[in-house]
Image 1 (cartoon, rainbow, N blue to C red):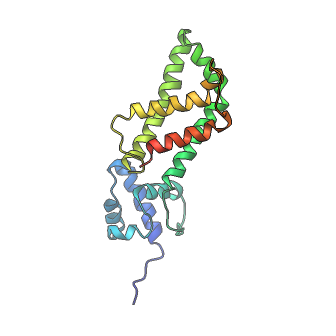
Image 2 (cartoon, rainbow, N blue to C red):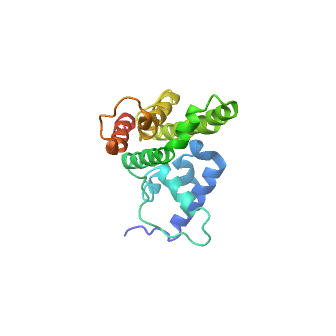
Image 3 (cartoon, rainbow, N blue to C red):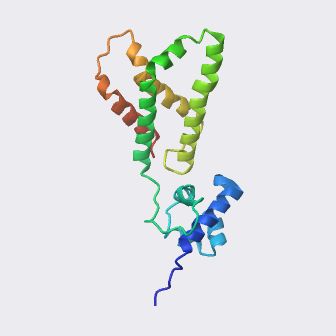
Length: 195
């Protein structure tokens, strides 16, 4: 006779995992810690989630829910290639939509207040956000191993900036189809980063 799974197991899992993540942080949390907290074998967790990232996603979605948490379909981390293309596309679109302002800031860095603001709040902050994103994906195995994260973060930013912003002010005649610049940029970056 098959063993019955308690109806509240998913609820227990999400609540226990939320507490473990809060207590130990993402890096220190192990699925075995969560399994121990719930009182099940680590392998049992894989009936609910396929990875620590998927478990964290469930906790972020359901962690504050009041009342019993119903079991959804098995939670899966999104396809890393599709997610990268989505993130890179949003970054490209954001830079392209703000290309005049970005170019203006870039060209006016000789103004001391603009230089300080642009270097810290603009360029440096963007690089830190992109570096954290790349590092997390590299550590999880979704991206190729990356040793010095600062270089690829800067490479991604500068590649997108070139094709979303600066190409519009290029002094050489543009001999490529700019309507496809977004697609080509994302393809190029995806081939470089994805495992």
